Length: 311
Image 1 (cartoon, rainbow, N blue to C red):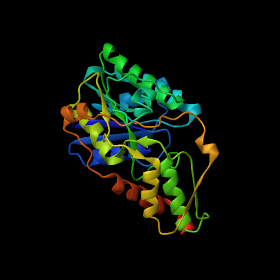
Image 2 (tube, one colour):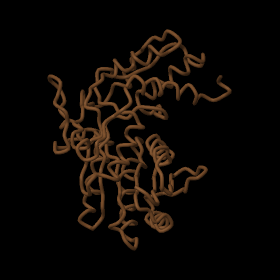
Image 3 (cartoon, rainbow, N blue to C red):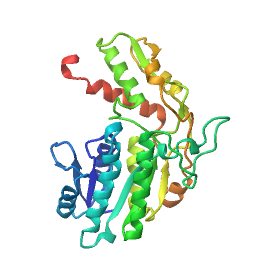
Image 4 (cartoon, rainbow, N blue to C red):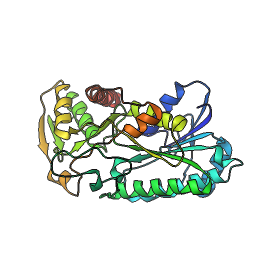
């Protein structure tokens, strides 16, 4: 993979890791875009068709990683579906659209209950398993995947990396483990009473370090096949309780855990792990960074991210 590479959502959790990965590869001219202006970032609302066309004409990328996304319910469709349609239509308007490789980061939330919920430990979920998302987020990501892959019938080269749960530096506090890390960091600084508020802890998930995810997406761009979706996963289950206990073991203070009923509302898939054999066969990718190391890095990042005045 060489030449011009465009990363959308480059200021986000995944986009930042992709940027770091691409900076380490030779021969790449990196272009970054995000809704929020930042140094070295081209501000662009990709859900605006005219703005998307202007961006693509300016960038003329050979590869696009569409990492823009949100967990905000009121912005799911615009962020995941509208922006994807506008981006793909903008690629189609380029002089040689078929030469552009487009990588869409999907989500295990697309599988939902079809990932094998309940009963004994479920078999690992494969790309050919049906999709039955149970959350608005999962529905919006499945719609994004289906729309993106449909553009192969319009001559575009689209690949999907269906990512299971991501962990690592930069993990936002809108995600459970990011919230735990942020609260622990605040408690250690004396900014919060030593009580960590949590929701359900029984769910079991398949976690992958964000740097490993970025490496997988780059390999999908360079070695994957057009029109295909690939699970990006470890194949291993970890309960939320297990991961919280591991993170608490890294804390410098004793902390009580308090479950908040408000955080336990709504449907939830009890367990889901992915089958990563398709990605391994196509690219040789396997996760390299252990979950314990990822947890420690997540906590350390939140410690550093606290404002200096809070030190």
